[in-house]
Structure formats: structure tokens, C-alpha cells
Image (cartoon, rainbow, N blue to C red; front, side, top):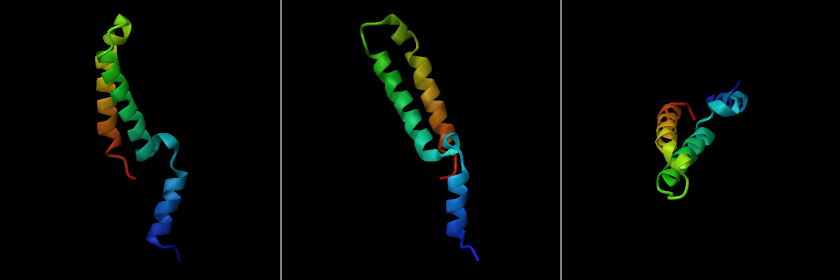
Length: 70
């Protein structure tokens, strides 16, 4: 007979990378950090132009991914 912990572990192992909470939260955090750095750099206008888009994408991604099961 399998225990609930074993079932949970088996379900986690079958889940693809893009549906796992931990790695996707890390990617979202990196996107937010990159957007922040792009916003405050004084060298390239193209980076500044897309900084808000990057910040918003990372924030929305983090909000969505935080609802995924662990």
C-alpha cells in the first residue's frame, strides 16, 4: 500500500520542468531583477525601453507560478 507521501513524490517526479513551482519562481525572480537593472542603466536606450515590459512579465509570471503546487 502506498502512502500519501509516496504518491506526492511520484506526482512531483512526473511533472515537467515548466510546471514546477521552485524553478519557475526562480526564473520569474531573475526576470524581475533583469528588468530592474535594465531600468537603471544609463547606456542603452533599447534596454531602458523594454525594462518595464520585463518587470511586468516577471511580476505576472511570479503571481501565476506562486499558485502552482509544490
